[in-house]
Length: 152
Ligand SMILES: Nc1ncnc2c1ncn2[C@@H]1O[C@H](COP(=O)(O)OP(=O)(O)OP(=O)(O)O)[C@@H](O)[C@H]1O
Ligand SMILES: Nc1nc2c(c(=O)[nH]1)N=C(CO)CN2
Image 1 (cartoon, rainbow, N blue to C red):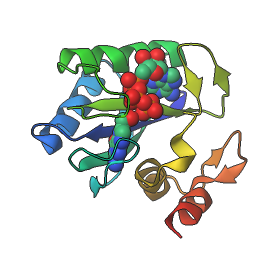
Image 2 (image 1 turned 90 degrees about the vertical axis):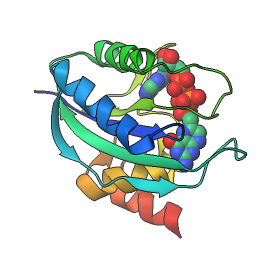
Image 3 (image 1 turned 60 degrees about the vertical axis):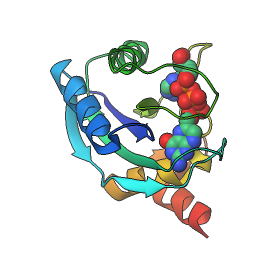
C-alpha cells in the first residue's frame, strides 16, 4: 500500500487534543497510521507574532491517491473548524502532505514534496524521528541529513 508522511501542527485551543483528534479522524477515514512521532513544542515560523505550536508527523498507509488524501486532510481541517485568515498565521489544526512515496507532484492544488518542508525543523525533526533514512525525492537527501543541517 502507498506510504505517505503527514505533518500536523496546532497553536490554538487545546493543541494536544487537536492533534489527537485529527489523528483519530484520519483513522476513521481508513488511513492507517503506521508510525507517530513525538509531539514537540516549537517557536512560530514565518509569521512570528503568534503562540507556540505543537508539531508532530505520522507515517501513514493509504489506498487514496495524493489528491484524494489532500482532500481528506482539507475536510478534516474544515470539520475541526479551521478558518483560513493569515498566511502562516494561527490555526487550531494544520495538516500538510509532505511526501507521498517518492512521487514529485506539481499541481496547482498540490505540491509534493511540500515545497517548504525541507526548511522547517518542526517538519523534518518529527519525520527524521520516525523514518530517518527516507530520501527526499527532489533533494535526494535523507531526511535525517536535512534535519541535521537545519538544526546546526
Ligand atoms: N503538500 C501540500 N499539503 C497541503 N496543502 C497543500 C500542499 N500543496 C499545496 N497545498 C495547498 O495549499 C492550500 C493552502 O494550505 P494552507 O492554508 O494549509 O497553507 P499554509 O499552512 O498557510 O502554508 P504552508 O502550506 O506553507 O504551511 C491547500 O488548500 C492546498 O490546496
Ligand atoms: N513552529 C511552527 N510554525 C508554523 C507552523 C507550524 O506548524 N509550526 N505552521 C504554520 C502554518 O503554515 C506557520 N508557522
